[in-house]
Length: 351
Image (cartoon, rainbow, N blue to C red; front, side, top):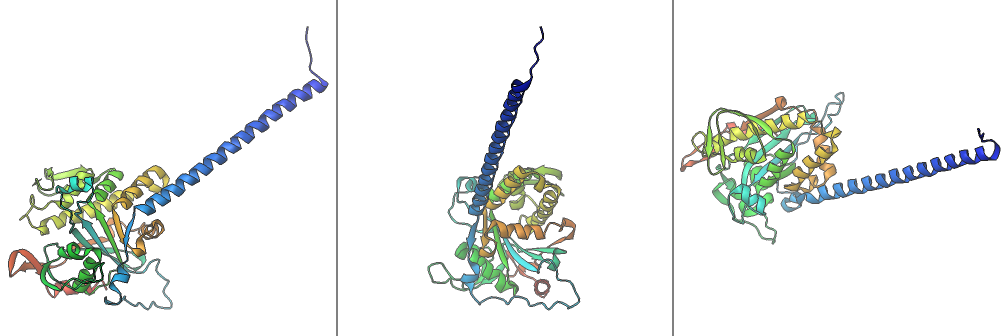
C-alpha cells in the first residue's frame, strides 16, 4: 500500500527543512563571525606583540642640533617626484651578552656590549640603488663628547677604537661618532643582536654563501671548507663574526664575508613570497623585531613596513658593498685609520 503525502503534511515537512537550513545558516554565520573576531583579535595581538618587540632610542632628542645638516634637494619642476628620499642608515650588529641565547651565541658572559659590525647603508632617492659601507671596528677615530642618560657627557677621546663609542655611550654615541668622522647625517639607526640575527636567518630558511677559502675559527665556532654552503642561523652568525680563521686574522678579512652575507640575505628575502604565507611572514617579522633596536623614527611596525615596501624592488645586483678606505695605523699595526682623501671622497658621495 502506497501512502502519498499531500496538503498540510507536505508543507509541514518543507517548513521543517527550511527551518533546519535557516538554523544551519545562522550557525555557520555565527561560527564565521566568531572566527573573524578571533582572527582580528589574533592579528591585533600579533601587531601589538611585534610592536612591543622593538626597542627604541630617541637619538634626535639626545643629539639635538649638534649634527651634520640634512641635505636639501631641489627637484626639477618637470621631474616626477621619486617614491622615496635618499636615506642614510647606521646599521650595527651588537655583541650584547644580555640574555641566555645571546651569551650562548656570543661565547661569553660579560654584561657589556660593543658594535661588533658597523655599516652605513645609503639608499638612493627612488630606491634605484644602495651603497653599503663597512666601517672596520678596529679603526682609530676621535670619539666626540657624547651625552649620557644621566645628563652628563663622555669625554673626547683621540685615537679611540671605533667600536668603543657604543661601549661608552650606546647607540647615541655610536651615531654621533659616525657623523663626526664622516660628516654625513644618519637619518635612522638600526641595531640587531646575536640572537635576533640568527633567528632571522632561521626564519628565512637559511642562506647560501660561497667562501673562497677554508674557515677554521674556534672563537666563532665556525669550520667550513671552501665552497658553497647553505647556512643556518648559528652558522651565518659565525660567518659574520669570524676573523681568526681567515686572511691575516684582522677585522678587514671578515668584512668581505659580511658583505657576501648581506647580499645573500637580500637574495633570500627576494626569493620568498612572504605575502602569500602569513605564517612565515609572522615568523620573519617576529625574528626581525625580537632583537631590534631603532631610533624613534622606525620604532613601529608601520614605519618598518613602509621602509621595507620602499625596498621591494631593490635587488642585490643594485647594492654596492664597499669598505671605508683604511691604512695601517702608524702607532699600532693591529689598528687602522681612514685613508685620506679617499675616505672623505666616499663619504661626500653619500651626502
